[in-house]
Amino acid sequence: MAVDLLLGLQWGDEGKGKIVDVLTKDYDIIARFQGGPNAGHTLEFDGIKHVLRTIPSGIFHKTAMNVIGNGVVIDPVVFVKELEGLDQFDIDYKAKLIISRKAHLILPTHRLLDAASEASKGKAKIGSTLKGIGPTYMDKTGRNGIRVGDLELSDWKTKYRNLADKHEAMISFYNVDIQYDLQEMETEFFESVTRLKELTFIDSEEYLNQAIKAGKTILAEGAQGSLLDIDFGTYPFVTSSNTTAAGACTGLGIAPNKVKDVYGIFKAYTTRVGSGPFPTELFDEVGAEMAEVGREFGAVTGRPRRCGWLDLVALKYTCEVNGVTQLNMMKGDVLSGFDTLKVCTAYTYKGETITHLPYNIEPENVNPVYTEFPCWKEDLTKMRNVDQFPKELNDYIDFLEKELEIPIKIVSVGPDRTQTILR
Ligand code: GDP
Ligand code: IMO
Ligand code: MG
Image 1 (cartoon, rainbow, N blue to C red):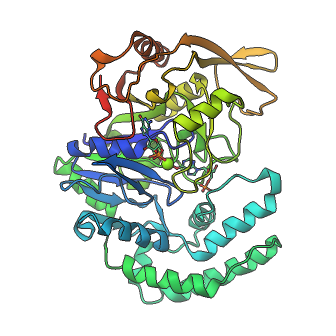
Image 2 (image 1 turned 90 degrees about the vertical axis):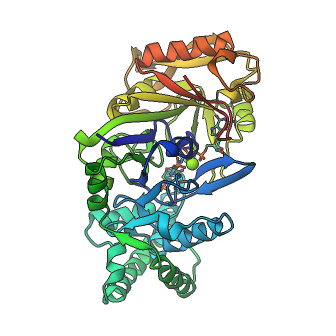
Image 3 (image 1 turned 60 degrees about the vertical axis):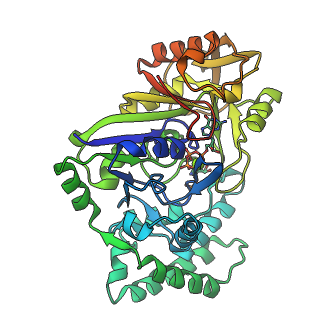
C-alpha cells in the first residue's frame, strides 16, 4: 500500500500546504485530488513565502513528481499566472508537473455565473471565493463540462462557444448587476489555454496505479477542509467537491484499499472564511487577537478569517468521516500568552447536551460547552523538539489525543518549514 492522504479537518486554511511541503521528501509523487484555485496553500522556506493555488505543494522539491488529478478544476488563466510566479525559482515544471486529462476546466463564464449566483442570494450568500468552482462542478455533474483532454481535440472551441453562450443566457436569468467584458476575458482565456497545452496531459489514474504497482509512494493533497465538504460540511455553506478522504479515491482513481495513512490537519483553534455556522466563533478581543497574531487573512481573497476556539465535537466528526490515522496540530504558537484556553467538548442543543454535529447547526440552536485550560506563556516559535514544550502545551496535546483517540504526530510552531516538530 503506497498512498497516504493529507487533508484539512476544519473549514480550510489549516496549513496543508506547509505540511505537504515538509513531507514531500518522503514521497515520489504529490497529487492534488479536488478543488481548484479557491485554494491558497502557503509554504515558507529560505525566507520566502509562496502561495500555490492549483499546483501541488511538492513542486519546490527536486525529486517529487506533481500530479493534478481528475477531481481538480483548473482555470487556465489563474494556472498560467501561478506558473509565471514559479519562473524566478528555477523549477522545471514542464518535467515535474503533469495534469489529468479528466480534470475539468473553469471557463470565464463560470466565474461570472459564480458572481451572479452570489449577487442574487443577498444576505444568504455562501461567501464564495468567486473563482467559478461551483458552476464548474455543476457542469461536471450535469455532464456538460469541458475537460483538459478536450483541448487535444479539434472541435473543443465549438463545444466551448455553445457552453459559454448558454452560460450568458443563465447570467441574464439571474438579473443582477454585474459588469464584465467577456471578449477581453476570453482573449486572456484562449492565450492561457495555449500555455497550458505546453504541459503534459496524462491519464492520471493509469499513471498513479502503475506507480503504486512499481512500489512508488504517493501523498494525496486535499484542498479546503472537511467542514466544507459538499456532503458532510455545513451545507449549503460549503464548497462543491468532496474534500474528505473518499474524494481522494474518486479524485485520483485510487482504490480505497490502496490508502494507508490519513493525515488530518487542524489548527489549535478554529477559523472560517466566508459565511455559515461556526459554533465556537469569538466576537470579542480574544478572537481579534487570534486573528491578529495568527495573521488570519485569506491567502486567495485577503478576506479576514473568523476565529474561535477549537471545536472537538466537529473535529471528532471529521476524524471519523476521514478515517484519520495521524493528526497534525498547527499554529499553537499563536495562542502563547493567552490567559485561558477553551475547547468545546459538547453542545447544548434544544435544551439537551449532545456530542455530535446536529443536522441543523444554526447559531440559535447550538451553544458550545467548554473545558478550560491554563495556556502556555512561552514563545513556541523557536522550539525545535518536544523536550522544549511547556507543561501546559503537553497537557493540551494529551487531552486532545485522549479525546480524539488519534496520535498527534506533528506540531507546527510557525509558518516556516523548519518550525515543524515531530512527536
Ligand atoms: P492551507 O490552505 O491549509 O494550505 O493553509 P493556508 O496557507 O491558507 O493558511 C495557513 C496560514 O498559516 C499560512 O499563512 C501559513 O504560512 C501559516 N502557518 C502554517 N502553519 C503555521 C504555524 O504553525 N504557525 C503560524 N503562526 N503560522 C502557520
Ligand atoms: P484552502 O485549500 C478556506 C470557502 C469560501 C466559501 C466556501 C465556498 O486554502 O484551505 P467556493 O470558492 O468553493 O465557492 O467557496 O468555501 N473556501 C475556503 N475557505 N480555505 C479554502 O481553501 C477555501 N476554499 C473555499 O470562503 O465560504
Ligand atoms: Mg488556504
